[in-house]
Amino acid sequence: MEDNGACGCGLEGGGRGKGKIDARIKLILFGFALVLIITSKGFRFLSAALAVSVASCLLMKVPFKKFSHRFPEPLFIAGVLFLIKALSGGGPGLVLHLFGLKVYLSRSGIFEGARLGLRVVAAVSALSLLTFSAPFEEILSALEWLKFPRQLVEMAFLAHRYIKVFLADAQAIYHSQKNRLGYSGMGRSLNSFGIMAGSLTIKTFEQAQATSLAMVQRGYNGKLPTGASDIRGYPGRGEFVFAGSALALMALLWIKLQ
Amino acid sequence: MSRKEAGRFSILIFFALLLMPANAYAMHISEGILPLGWCVLWFAAAAPFIAYGLRRLKRVSALDVSFKPFAGLLSAMVFIISAMPIPVPTAGTCSHPCGTGITGILLGPGISVLVASVALLLQALFLAHGGLSTLGANIMSMGVTGSIAGYLTFRISRRLGLGLMPAGFVAGVFADWSTYLVTSFELASGIRGHDPLFPLFAKIALAFVPTQLPLGILEGFMTGGMVALLNEKRPDILVKFGVIKQKEAEV
Image (cartoon, rainbow over all chains, first blue to last red; front, side):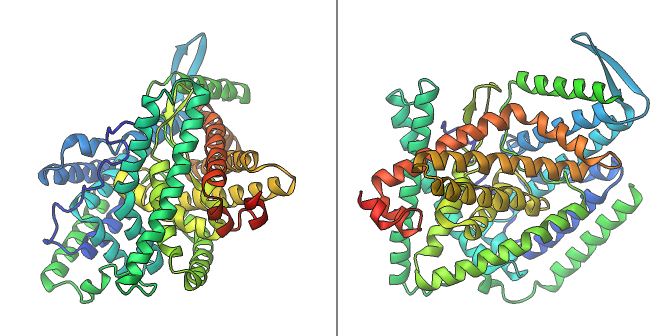
């Protein structure tokens, strides 16, 4: 496993806009934007949502490479679905000659596929805007405030805290296996990968025992402080005005750009 | 388009994917793919399983204070495992395992759903693998189906007399393949529009065969290897979670 950011990219991503707007407001705005994106029928609103999200991320000085790392997987799946839609849609269309086969591409399928692709890119951009603008802990606290199950929030807090630790462990194991030709050939690779995954499970168990012991010593009684208590009150009037205006603007754009 | 032509085009997609040089990915449904109604439906479908998992977690945590931290840390491990690129020889690409086979075996399907849900939430937020609107659908495929398939196939294989490694292998394979089949169904039902469901489901399932079929087998080896290593180095962990009995660990 190379340390190429394939796994750790974006783990430290959030927080550029922290302190300015309450994470709860950001979460509600994102949720509303996502609903509008998903229900949008045309290309114009989706293009506008994409442009606003990308511009906001660039204004927050999110490195473009980091931002673009989020798109290969969604685009891969959207690409496959585009192909399926374009190849299986009905009605008139284009004819391509490929490998001696006549391939019919349906116009309605291409349209549907392209809209789906744009919808995916717009939605992923909006999600990226949320995660780059709010620290993860604040998002989780906001989720808890919005009645997301507390136990899941606690698990997510712990998981987030230990991802980097386990990632470092996994990389150390991987590199020592690789240096001893553990990944030369299929059989050895599978064996090495199984050993690495098993070792991680053992480390997880040992780390969990050490962590819970340390937590008990500090007064842990089964409830992990998640930070939601810090945001017990409601956001200020200014933030309500901002949120209301943003929601109204998004709704207006959605209606106008259909 | 006739059925014959549709079949030919599906084969074309299959070979086009074989030729793709880029990385392939675990089948998480990305943000924005599913229509709103389907997002809500899959959240509603996943909710009872999450509620059951939460109840079970509460009960077990009351007896063992280290259990919740373990479940949380296991989520981090699933996050890392499902972000590890492993080579898929037939597709000439790398792909990512699910990791729910092992959590299903260790924790049982109820809490494994929670572990997968947290891993999926983190992946959606940090890597854009999956999404928040599609979290319900991804929990249903990877969390619920993967965990149940992994748990049940492991238990049935053990009852049939298979050893830990082969039983782990079967559990890993079925956890992965069932996840992939349910994801294909979710995708087909979400994007079909006015098209019939099952032909589209077949096309999507076929399109992902080059990566997912071998990936399932690789995940089987991974899960089997993990269980075997645990049995060799720390059998007490398997005993603690009821995977093997104390007597078996002493042999």
